[in-house]
Amino acid sequence: MSIDSILSELRKDQVHGASWYFLKGIELLEIALGKKLGKEEIRSLLNEIRNIRPGMASLLNLTQVIDQSLSLDLDLGMIISRLKETHEKALENLSKQLDRFPVMCGSG
Image (cartoon, rainbow, N blue to C red; front, side, top):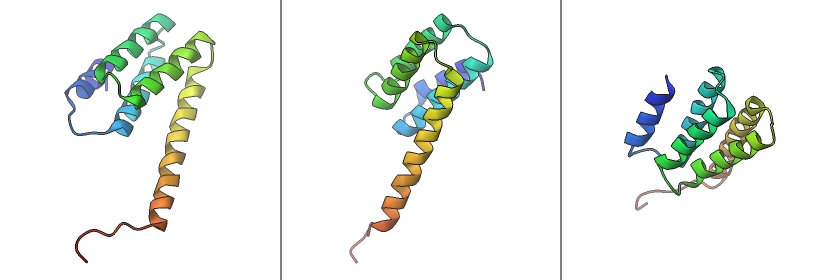
């Protein structure tokens, strides 16, 4: 997918939650790195991402981490990999916790 098509998908979406937006933001950044976009182009993309769902913490946190990483000249590929790993570990931990305390639905 292209950056523009993902941005369009994010703008039109009305069913997904914060984690989905976070992962789509990661996907956008991976594409930007693959296209070897410069710092200012990536910062412009970060502004686009922020404006998709103003106030959505998952997008604000993602863009803040990447913006700070750019300012510190950190390896964005490594940062993005670490963000994905952290997301996966958090999802795994949550799943384990939910398995320990099954939720009962219905009247019975």
